[in-house]
Amino acid sequence: MLRRMNPILVIVHQPTSDPGLVGEKLRSYGYSLDIRCPALGDELPPTMAQHAGAVIFGGPMSANDDETLPFIRTELDWIAIALASGQPYLGICLGAQLLARVLGAEVSPHAAGISEIGYGELWPTVAGAPYMPTPMSVYQWHSEGFTLPAGAVELATGETFPHQAFAYGETVFGLQFHPEMTTALIADWTTRGADQLQRLGAQPREQHFQQHHQHGAHVDQWLDHFLTNWLKGQGWPVPQSASGSALLAHKRSR
Picture: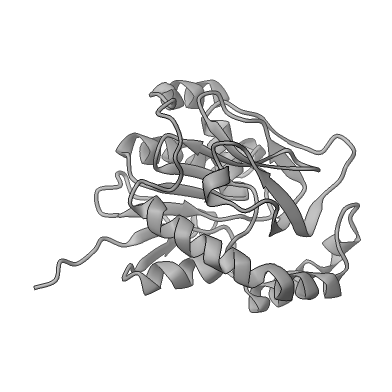
């Protein structure tokens, strides 16, 4: 008799949120998705005992909105529980920024008011080079970035927002970019967020599709490799530098 795998906890921030390619791949590996939206009142589990891992996706709000949006405070508190469990954790865009805050880092807008909306190039660090080509073009949609948390290992950098990917131990990762994108998601985001395409640094809508056609298959291949190793606790060859300081840093962020 086959052993039933625990689901992956997926945290989203809008009723229209879609885990996209990340969700497709996790399901293809045999995992079900337990999708919850704290912004709509969904509760988060008190432990990770019934889940094989957690992915927190992006959203239009800021990781600094915990004083005005109670669910952001809830997620910041809950991430400390996820980290303490030792289960795989992946933060994407806002999910990475929330993780960075819990680990004591700062989240803030670009000093020149620039956003990253569309495809852009990343460059791996020495730690990230074995798992990321140079350069790698990925999809972005954000106007804030994070500083590198103490104890984290930087994996990839970018030109506009320098900190693009980091690891905290073997199973915890933050990605500023969006590897989950599909053509359908790009169509949805550029329609719902059409006004944001006027921001400084945003690419024209047609360029999003052109660049996705050019780079999407490469990101798909990278994501498959990353997720399978992430779930094994072998996502990147990073040193064991992270410590239990996450909870202390989390307390300082409150």
